[in-house]
Length: 390
Image (tube, rainbow, N blue to C red):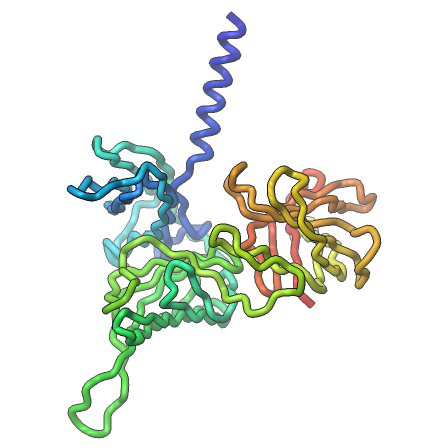
């Protein structure tokens, strides 16, 4: 009898862990304010290669997101391969800026694979008076391999971000769009203006004039990653389509340290360039302590000791470049194991007796050109691992 209970407990535990692991819906920013924009990120997979569509229903107390598998079409063959998709949804695109939500709202995710909608995930969100410090975006050109004919130029001054979209259609004509406004945490929602030639009736006249043309929704999920979806925008002659899947932009990388692998992992970001001189270490605002110091990072080469293709960086104190490193950073594509493509600290110790080993993990997209911040734990205390390039 005891064995049966053990098996049941294992099955229940496995089921609970699976439920916790499956989180197709996430809401940003961290603190929701009824007067500030917020975004819902949907990350899931279609069960076949024909894809589907995502619909949104909004009421004061309930937000429903329904993913519906595409109906079979005569002559079309759907593969049996799971196809991942992303949607970045702004509920106010449907109900307007002045719509009033309840203090607490249920966000439900339903999937319809042909047998009617089935509730797959639900979470509760609450609106309050909390604020969010503006995430700092890396200024410069941002591109995505999914849209080779377009790019974003992002600039930010304080809490104000501007985004200029340069898109070229199949008619070889350029389409320019521009948006500017405040960043709420890691969320930016801006009205886009299209720029193009106008017909002059009287002289003189302006060569071009802006015309309001929908909105752009941006989730700054990392220092080097922006998830973007366009809403109610017309892209004449373009591969861009408003209201389709969100696209992931990364900042253009113009230079890389010699000897560092540059090939991306399955179309994702390449191994981050951590080589060089930094100032950094562990810090805690609550504890009022840090161990910031000058650090020198060098690429130590390929490492498959964990059973997957990985890379290792040696980190030295001061300007040393040889000998025993102070600690190491291990980076790998761990998707076959847990879905992550990222890095972790190895052998980092913190504290007066250097007895507490610290753990910290960060994604490739978290590494900016001049800074890195990652949550860390040292001896049971929550800290942050930070690097600032010298």
